Length: 187
Image (cartoon, rainbow, N blue to C red; front, side, top):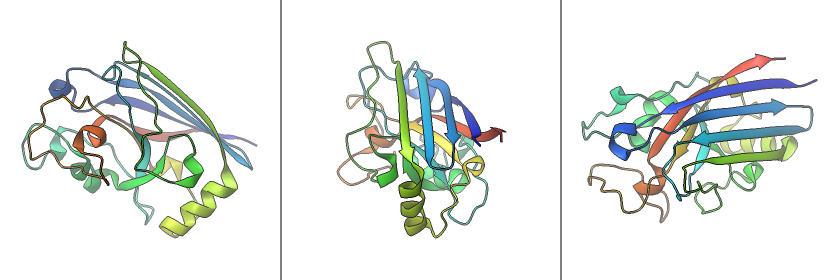
């Protein structure tokens, strides 16, 4: 038996970053595997893009952030400003999502047209074990999560008010550029 989920990914911060990143993410869950496919268009070109699902550990449904989340009115919805609506960063879509290792540089890089595609088959047992250690439940609850795509070029001028430092990675790496609500499409 397979359960499928999908997220339509829409732009966030597009007016400020000069591109309207958009795409789709699909998730297929079987008894022992999670298959993730993400295809993105019009992202900042030649840039690494962190991508994750975010949510609330207590199981509340997450929603996508919008311009209304820009509480400091600097014109950008930064990573910290997404938390009230979308929760915390949970699972990365990198070279090994099951390890839940977030701050690093092993994420997809867009080509010179701003396109990238990501596909990963994830061992579900390892992922749910690590997820339970981090968040207290082995249930991924994908239909209560949102997908975020992050990352703008290092030379983009960001005001000092744009927050998002994670480890040694600054707000250029963590600035959300697109977001989508994950919805169940079939059992």
